[in-house]
Amino acid sequence: MVIVMAAGATDAELAEMIGQVEAAGGAAFVSRGVSRTIVGVIGHEDVLESLDLGTLPSVSEVVRITAPYKLVSQEHHAGTSTVTVGGVPIGPDTFTLIAGPCAVETPEQTLAAALMAKKAGATLLRGGAYKPRTSPYAFQGLGLAGLRILADVRAESGLPVVTEIVDPADIDVVCEYADMLQVGTRNMQNFPLLQAVGSAGKPVLLKRGLAATYEEWLMAAEYVAQRGNLDIVLCERGIRTFEPDTRNTLDVSAVPMVHRMSHLPIIVDPSHAAGRRDLVVPLARAGIAAGADGIMVDVHPQPEAALCDGGQALHDATLAELAEAVATLPALLGRRSAVRMLP
Ligand code: PEP
Ligand code: MN
Image 1: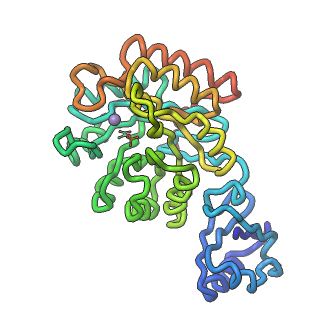
Image 2: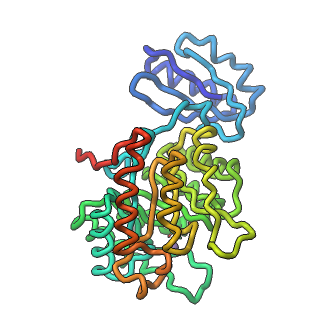
Image 3: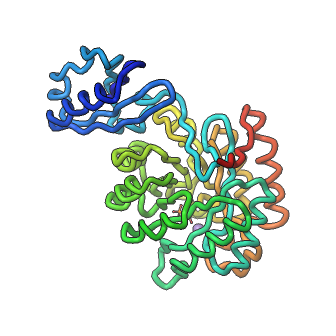
């Protein structure tokens, strides 16, 4: 259930309410909004009901959440939340372009990709230092050296960094360099990893597992939220179907469905959905039209020489086409480009 505290509730009253929940074996997660404090309460429903928290003068409302995912549900928070990454918003009023190389390879390649991304309108840089590859013989990423390159390129380009974490053991080092932690499709149900990123205090980009239902995806997000982190952005990146001509099938329905089921913003990754450059812009347009809060694409200064996913990386003409789509289509839906707010 979700407890909406009364407007004038004091910290002492909040602590008293949480004390009652914990004494009953439950757990409480506090979200402080501008005008009201909301507490997600998890525990045995019957025991929590018997506390009759709605009768406390400090409580304005008790909302019973029927969805199995609680903190990330629409019932907990109506509408779409805004998640801010290094000063860049991702949410309902804006449209955010995240772009960069699939993998960090060299300082020159990463900087060139970041500048291409920025020119196309990106306000966040993507790039993998730890790569979750299907084959153990494929390029696995530069690890710490890659994170350092990303930090240098952030300083040079001004673009905050989104980068993947694959092992909970790397959480401290990745947090030292990243502005947003990406959990990839292969790790969507890696529960220790989800709990580690939930406790890390950084925004999280949670990609959909390649065979995950919406409910499984939102339950994975709930693992992050349950550790006290509601700064989660979901990413539809294509699911596995019977179609061999594309790498995956972009599930455009995910965008409006997630917006109905959850308050978390959702972006689309047409690059990993298609696996081929010629489909990236059409799928990006579809994602924007469906109401995505942003898109994430691979770009590379020399796709033919890329160590990872070069066949889907945008470059020259295709990147210009993407930039045109991003500059024009979101505005038709009432969204403005997300720019970085400096503190
Ligand atoms: C990526 O974005 O670099 C990536 C590996 O994506 P996915 O987890 O969607 O395959
Ligand atoms: Mn990739």
